[in-house]
Length: 403
Image (cartoon, rainbow, N blue to C red; front, side, top):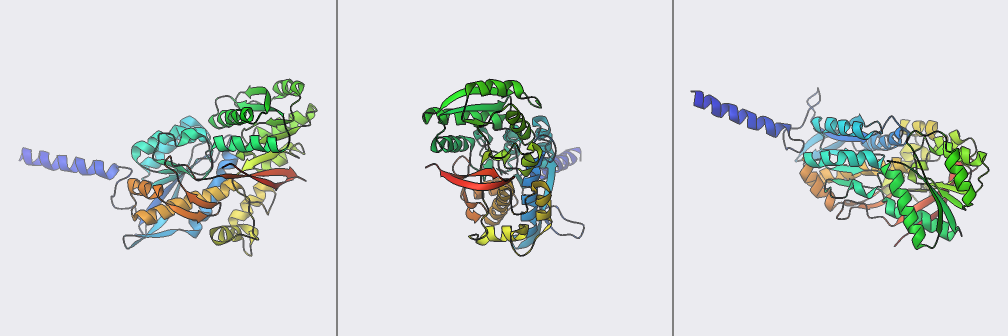
């Protein structure tokens, strides 16, 4: 009898371990009404230094969930539910957020805005065999060596090359760089810009660094002013940007100042109080309602650039103070959700390993264009948009292609 009970106990424990696996094919969670549910994890900063950009991605993801909220797998209908966890723009909190998502039995994860938190959480998603799809995390280390991480954006080596090419095309022969110490995005993008400038014959006359949460940039800006650059590249956070811009102009620095994709945020314009005029950014997307078709047309119409509007557009108006502008990261968030949704359809499974396999050969046209992934999980992209602030708002300037 004891031997029989021991065998039964062993079987129960084994079944319990299977049921706890993040990528298992166990029965799906259900709603109170008995409806089957598939959970998509949302791994984004909604607070902290990158909270402003993170929430823009979240709203793109939420809107996509409104459009695509049910899915049929194996002949059964499932409700697609978002499980949002705030990584708080912090690498330690990112690990906690990742663990919470895994414990929440999500089938796939979307995010994050900010490469550092994405890198910090990546190994946890990989170990749990849950695929993650980044929206705008551009540092190469996000997907490097991690077959479970994908992304819908271009990478920093490409973005740095684009900004360097912009400088070359506009006759800038002397540039300066400002980056944030310990920030994977800022330091990575700054370094790629420097390398591209060296290849383009552009002299980098100053490379300055600042600590996280720095408020006073006048010392490093004074050093830069003495080197007389024609362009300053300062890839940094939304919170830091208006400080750098305002203090540079206060010191009499008149050259053009540029940032990476994080700087495409209307709060920078508002908080810089005129000092943002003339700044340029590289970004992933530019809405054009006149030529939009398919997924993009539906996205723009639902976000106030067509005949109808939703709560999403109301939110963007408050943040951007520019009703006709849709942030690129919101469009990328939408596309990341769409990639997850289509991969689940293709796999006909809620299992992470099956969804990951489907992502490797997925191809579709989203809001930001054609979406597919290379062998590293990175999006196949060859063009970036450059926008400039004119009369207090972002305006499309040019497209830069790198073949």
